[in-house]
Image 1 (spheres, rainbow, N blue to C red):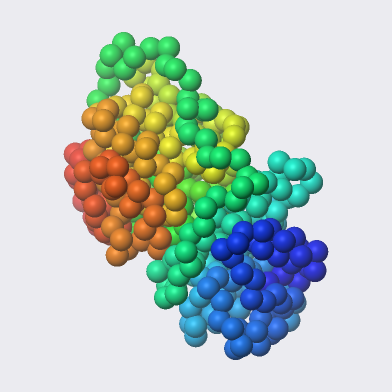
Image 2 (cartoon, rainbow, N blue to C red; image 1 turned 90 degrees about the vertical axis):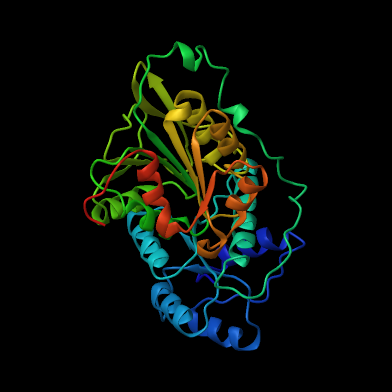
Length: 358
């Protein structure tokens, strides 16, 4: 649903290009949408937040209170747009995506891949009772790349690095991850280990997301920049549309932010982060994989486990979408499967951190 006919047409063309997705209706405002929903209840709604007659947030709240349907917010990359989109996530939307940029062939391919994947992920959200089958990757898009495209062969082995016992916590999440990460991070005390996070989210949205979490948590939460040190009492979130890798200089951990191709159809990619953590932190790390569709992060978590890290997956009951944790569990990359409400305390236990107040 979008008030721009051009945007509606572009979304229609992109989503209709996948044989597993059927467009059951389009609407230019919430009142038209309500009339259409009375006739056919969709599996997923895509929703612009700036709408005539009724704003998208109000419409979203009505949907969530009366007839919950997975909703994907499609927003522009503006300060007001990202702020409103973040409010939409807090009101029950399962995903937020950028309005597609279609100026070049590459942009159209990436936008198509992202939108199709997000709609399918949303169709599996636990608030929705009916599900559609997952389709094969569209033939028109590039195959998945692995984290090898971002991680060069190391110049030095872990054994040659300056020894450190400083703990690192690496976290990956996708659909439903904004609420899961809020629950997770709010449980950490000021002396928590350094945390590095990849949440599948468009650029600019991660800055708003980090700022909101920073207001709600005891620890500092910020969008990461190249060279940022991984410090106790701080969580670094990878910027949208950028990969984040952990690096070491002596005993000091820091992050590197970089461009690059989509890895596992994502940028940022959880696999890129996890594999860099396996390489540079090894047994000093704890890995956590949370709610989300697909297999991004599964192989990286397995490498973390093989390097000596303790690994945790969010359980199915508390996941919005149990895709990413399920794939990691299939690979036997997980030491412990837990409720989102318990993961932070297990991480603190593994890192020998004791909170004085819950």
